[in-house]
Amino acid sequence: MDSSSTGSAKIPLKFELKPPPYPLNALEPVMSERTLEFHWGKHHRTYVDNLNKQISGTNLEGKSLEDVIVASYNNGDTLPTFNNAAQVWNHDFFWECMKPGGGGVPLGDLYHMIDRDFGSFQNFSDQFKKAAATQFGSGWAWLIYENEKLKIAQSPNAVNPLVWNTVPLLTIDVWEHAYYLDYQNRRPDYISVFMDQLVSWDAVSSKLEQAKKSNAAEKNA
Amino acid sequence: MHLSFCETVQIPWLSSSFVPAMAMRSLLSRKTLTSVLLSGPKSMGLGLTAAQSHRSLQTFTLPDLSYDYGALEPAISGEIMLLHHQKHHQTYITNYNKALEQLHDAMEKGDSSTVVKLQSAIKFNGGGHVNHSIFWKNLTPIREGGGEPPKGSLGWAIDTHFGSLEALIHKMNAEGAALQGSGWVWLGLDKELKRLVVETTANQDPLVTKGPSLVPLVGIDVWEHAYYLQYKNVRPDYLKNIWKVINWKYASEVYEKESS
Image (cartoon, rainbow over all chains, first blue to last red; front, side, top):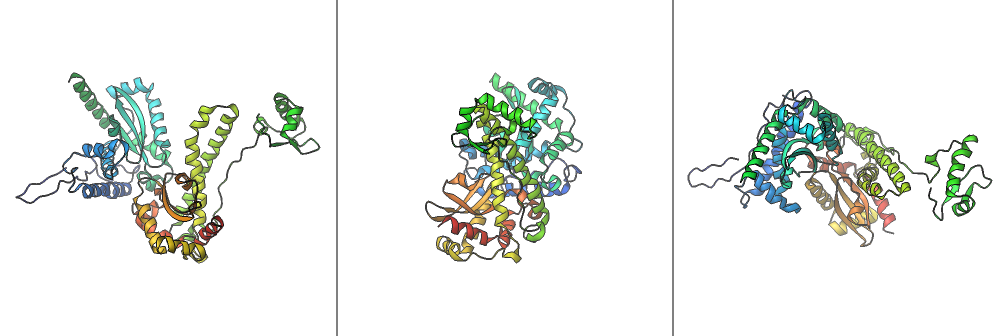
């Protein structure tokens, strides 16, 4: 979020469209540049632009994105800003979950926790893929950290784990726009490729470390 | 094996081909009837299996389109029509049939837990089949009358209720564009209140989930698969263009039939 304070002119606080942590063609050939151009350049950008229009002049202006999401979720009785706010966050998070030459298996703590909470990495992978494949309509599948355990979750449309007060570690976008140009109706193929060649386990591990630190801090508070 | 009061069972090797279930039950115990059906017919070359020995399950197949995939161009591309029909609709049917078979089994066993668990798969996939079957009939090539405004009673009802066809289209496009995620925008007839309505449904919920007396006249699929390859993120352009191939003749027929 950027703000400006030049002279006495009142300049609204706006959310920015954050670029992915790699060039738009970096995930070729499994996720095409064309897909990133539309998915990031149009869909994600539109969520940002529309959110900024919606919050301008309201009491949500100046709040963090997470605060806007939780306030707009309104315990399930969502306000108009929810969809845009959550989708801005979801897409920021999604780009971070991938990297060129991704996939493989995680290492260290993350690997052990997956092994502990799912029985094996293979089990986790199968269950995560199933969650992604069976989310009907638009939505997301998540690996989340809750009560010091790892769990898999699905959500419809714009909903994300922030509204469940759990910590997201990994997500896959299963709205059709995420895969249609490259895979058309073949969502399972997209999901397999995501797991095998796109997931950034480094990013997931660092989110896990962050989550554990916050959890420990809360407990000691 | 459950036979209801009014059901008949076809036992080909008996002289009367249809035997009232009540009569069958009085002749044979449930166990015996099943074993007769399983053992007898095999030796007579009829090859009935346990799966066929009870009430048959109706499953579904992909309905044909009455136009070529490319016939709705340029409003909707042939590429989209082929994928939409042969992949998306077919998948709903395949999964619907699977869920129905599982439901059938669960009902036979009296497994209520499974019966209830299957309801969402049936709603998703059965709804997908219902909705797309209507959608193909809602579309027609321009040379077959696609886009020609409705005349007769439906045209009159639209003007009366919405002011004009343009106003109706404007309203449906606004609601279709604003729909978050996946779903449909509908023009429907409320049979009870005898008036037209514009409604949206989420995912593959059929129009009837918004009101038991609602009958779909025109449905527009706003799932991304319906337009993405051609219109990308610009759903409003898809909505603007699809009216050129809407089959108002079909909608009028449904309206006349349901409002009589």
